[in-house]
Image (tube, rainbow, N blue to C red; front, side, top):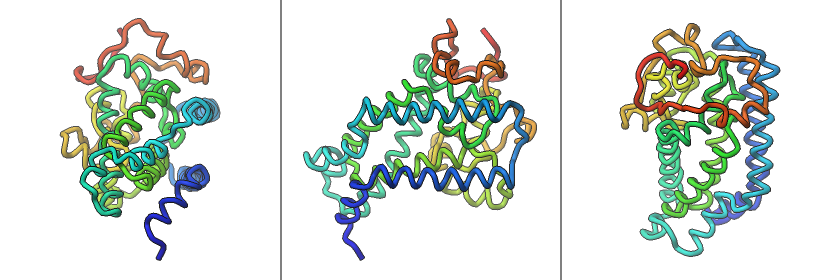
Length: 288
């Protein structure tokens, strides 16, 4: 068995290849799963949505690699070299440090997600993700470029403060990217299997509630990978009130299918004079 240090060095060296291969594998698997066992009938143009969602994802990937070469793993390497962060301060054994680092980062992403629904300026960016009027695996990569940049900085700060090991960061990033495809996928999972998975993980049925047009449901199920945080923090909802087949996906004040193009996704945060803070209102969202 290879020592952890050797595994960590190899993983970091091949970080881009690992992320590309893992993303492609999850994408292909979920694509086949959606074709064979769809959960809901899509209501809008799949071709238009996929083109826009995947285009903004490609734009985000190129932008991050071009403008922000200091990727999260580099921040973890720097923290390890300098001895920065809580984990490095206490000199935890390697495997516990990796587990604690990855789990802690998942909680940070949960808190970030709640904040993006709470702070009006952040919501302007994050609502691009929620304006998709259908939900499938490509919704999992539909994020505004500025939100991606902001999220990247938050992650790097969290990595340094925690002192998360580089291998923990790589595992977290791979699981986060693949998990986002999985949790947003339009797939049918039998209820007993879904219930068993939810003990630990966010499932597509669990996360779909978060994309409901009803605000009190939009403000639930913020988790990306681990389902624990919503249960612990009191933001968990088991099922949508209208059922998975009957629920309406998206935002109440954005129902124009013609405005699903890539250009509209990029300018959307600038198009509305007033954006309501979503964390407080309860009920059906209305235009204002």
